[in-house]
Amino acid sequence: GEDVEQSLFLSVREGDSSVINCTYTDSSSTYLYWYKQEPGAGLQLLTYIFSNMDMKQDQRLTVLLNKKDKHLSLRIADTQTGDSAIYFCAETSWNKLTFGTGTQLKVEL
Amino acid sequence: DTAVSQTPKYLVTQMGNDKSIKCEQNLGHDTMYWYKQDSKKFLKIMFSYNNKELIINETVPNRFSPKSPDKAHLNLHINSLELGDSAVYFCASSHEGWSNEKLFFGSGTQLSVL
Image 1 (cartoon, rainbow over the protein chains, first blue to last red):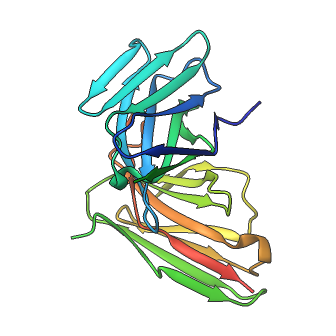
Image 2 (cartoon, each protein chain N blue to C red):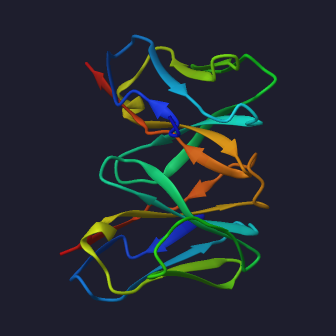
């Protein structure tokens, strides 16, 4: 498909790990991003990965990149209630960012 | 101080009206954007301006006209509003406009067309 695809919804228990998946479309994307959108707010950049890497770790966040399958994932360790938000992956394509369809993460006590 | 600020936060109006949304950034960035987020949270770029010049103009009805009086401001004017224009509109900015740059977003303007 033409869209950058993500699953719509993910529910986890507090303290568990969350894994949010993304399938992107442009194999020439130089950078791939994860943005977070809290209710009533704009998007904030969480982390990004350069296309020649297959993994990046940043505190509780781990990004995995599989270029062959055009698959990107974001793992959040020890998920907290404050992590409840919508998460968007984004690819760089034709010198602009194209966002994924978004995954709503709900963290339950 | 808010880095990217947009006004109003909420806008409720009737079909057929003309309305504007204003955006200002105090980050000294050269590039500004307008994104539209629909009810399913799908986010799509509408326009981008670099130093007051139009760079990206996606397939947006010509009822939407962006205006950049200076590089710190990018306003969005919408003529003859339609029901389908109801959405959240986000302004954003980045340093130079390259795709590998971080975007800074405003908190959005929720437009409801009745």
